[in-house]
Image (cartoon, rainbow, N blue to C red):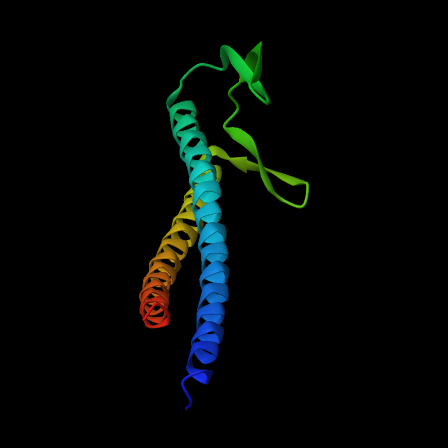
Length: 147
């Protein structure tokens, strides 16, 4: 290859690697968001499961406490302990379940969310390895261009 064609080829290779790097960084950012969102969901599941376990232990028929309305808003209220709770199963469908069944459903959800977090972390590690490899290739091309 002629001497004046080599810098053009290297510039094209550099541009391609930089585009790939940006794309991988965007994908890594999406995986990080999935991890963060699922970590919040996991925390809510664990809190709900623990609350249900405590509720199952109670021997009283009524409890007085704060009831969450969402968005950090609470009201004082009485909670009837009937051994049954209502669980959102998706698509706006709420089913009455025994406390033990609800705990079991939450444990299933917890397992799914943990698997999702683990999968996203594994993918993120692979993406980071690819980013590192691309960064090395970019550095080599830049060194060759600067000669």
